[in-house]
Structures are given as structure tokens and as C-alpha cells.
Length: 229
Ligand code: GTP
Ligand code: MG
Image (cartoon, rainbow, N blue to C red; front, side, top):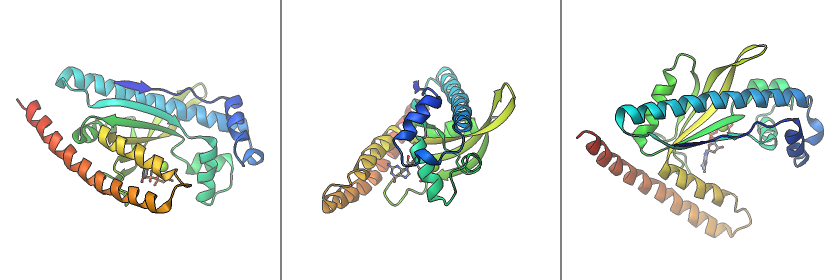
């Protein structure tokens, strides 16, 4: 299993990113923003390591890797500010700290649906991990057909000046759900395309989400059977 880690963004990188947004002049204290990014990045690393360790342990004890691969991502400063504005908050460091819990994100792509809940449980039970929010879009898919399990957890990060609880967003999904979400995401960016065609694709994708779910449930059942013998 591969965890694709990200480098944390330093002041220069964040400055460069901000130049491409319309928020360039409204940012209070860049150093403080970079501190938050660095802290959240450490949080993602902590969670990433926990997940890697769980996957290793499962592979040793059960001869099965629940996690296929993982991707870390840091929210771009552009979408960070868009989100604050959308939620009705002004662009201040305090508001970033208090209201944004997905600066650091990890996408955990599993082989089967059971793997999602197995890994979720093993991670949530760890004494230094606190689940702050849980949304199960597998149990209750979105209108688009989107399926995944979303968690926001908090994990302590030890720094030179003390220990800080840091939020990390985790999206759990199977390879099938991931394939679907990538294509649907691509479609949502086709704003210049013929709306009739986009609607047709969206409708088809909604059907395919159900079909994929059915196939995944059937494949899961074959796998369960194989594991039990
Ligand atoms: P915000 O993070 O504040 O927007 O709200 P939220 O946390 O309630 O959002 P949500 O639970 O919808 O998760 C947001 C993330 O999930 C997005 O950034 C996407 O990565 C993913 N996502 C949610 N809905 C869809 C969808 O319909 N299609 C695709 N492709 N991805 C989705
Ligand atoms: Mg979110």
C-alpha cells in the first residue's frame, strides 16, 4: 500500500498560491496561516502513519491489506478562503482555526466495503484519536450518487511549545467509489459543455453508482467466503 504524502507549504509557496486568488490583499498574518498549515500537515502525517501501521498489522495477522492506497492533500488557500466566505465568516486566522477542519485531508482507498468500516473502527478506537464528525454517504448516498465515509478526527501533535489537537478530514472509499467520484468530479468541472449532455451523463452516473454498489456487495460476499475457508 502506498501513502502519497504531501510536503507542507512554506510562506513562499502559500504566497505564490495566494497570488493566483482574488484574496491576495485580505490575508491578516501569513506566518500564522503557515503555522496552521504546518500543524495540520503534521496531523495528517500522524493519522497517515496510524493507518499505515494498521494496514501492516492486518496484512500480517489476516493475510489481507484492507487499504489499497492513500493520498494526503492540503486544502489550497483559494478554497480555504472560498469556504470561509461561503460559511459567512471573515478572513481571519481565528476563523480559520475555529471553523475549518479540513485543511489536512487523507483519502483512504480500500479494496472492499467491509475494509472501510474495519479500518474506521480500528482508528476511532485509538485512545489519542477523537471523532469530531462522521458522515456515512455509503449508508446514505448523496443525490449525485456519491458514496464514501467521511470522518473528521482530531489527533494530538507535539510541538516545541506544547501539544495541540489538530483536525484531519478522512475520506474512506473503495476503489470502485473512487473511480466513480473521479469521473463525476471531472463532469462537475465541465461548465462550458452542452448542459443537456452534462445532465445525461449525470443521470447515467447516478445509475452506475447503484450498479457499482451492487457489484461491490457481490464481490464482497465472494471475498468473505474465501476468507472464511
Ligand atoms: P464542506 O467541507 O464544508 O463543503 O462541507 P462538508 O464537509 O459537509 O462536505 P461533504 O461532506 O459534502 O464533503 C466534501 C468533500 O467530499 C468534497 O470536497 C469532495 O471531495 C467530496 N464530495 C462530496 N460530494 C461529492 C459528490 O457529489 N461528488 C464527488 N465527486 N465528490 C464529492
Ligand atoms: Mg469538508
